[in-house]
Image (cartoon, rainbow, N blue to C red):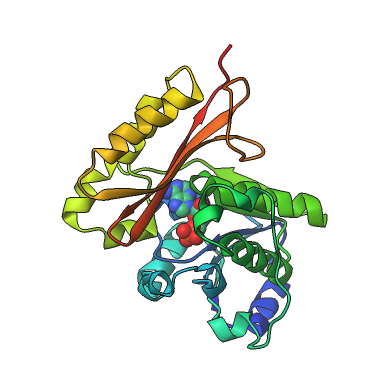
Length: 278
Ligand code: AMP
């Protein structure tokens, strides 16, 4: 497995690799959720194709300086996971490699990003789209694998592809969870033991509320369970249309019940799909 730290290294390495190139973009601090994305990329690439993992803590998608500074960075174990799961190469650029100090062009998504995480993280998805487009251009990947855990991110990346006529295939992978239901996340390792023990409440709240008969009932049932937490503070709790991400007024089409909850300064997100009621 090779490691490239610069765009020039990456280009040189990729010039001798075979298609299809399947990219797994990450911010590192890899866990079994990321590993299953790499496994899926390996299957899609086949024995002769190329699996490339990128590890880059993208500064322009962080809305809170404190979150960027404290984001876990664990390169050595990350490289071991990439290797064990069959990656052919890993791209680990430094910030200066990716962004010119006077960079002045950014992708802006101003529809789907006006809901859910976008409402409390201004500019976050513009930063995500910009780095994803740069990674697609740098790697010329045929396909890229993303986790459904970040379902708004996935929806916005699909929208970027549609609106900018990009031809990269987007492959999604279901959320990988801890045995008690907490969605795996690089941020989980920063939770205190007390907070960690309370976090299965998030999925429990979403799942038990999802059987409700009206949007109002679903939202109030989920809110009750989340608000009983002595530690978790709701950032948002929304029931949205699965396609437009706008607040759902009925249950007649597919909807998503999604939330973000702060435990101290750690923000956790999760969602469940709700099928339409007859
Ligand atoms: P991140 O490093 O958090 O930016 O995540 C990199 C990729 O891994 C994204 O496509 C995420 O959606 C995906 N991912 C993160 N956590 C999980 C998980 N628990 N299950 C599945 N995919 C995940």
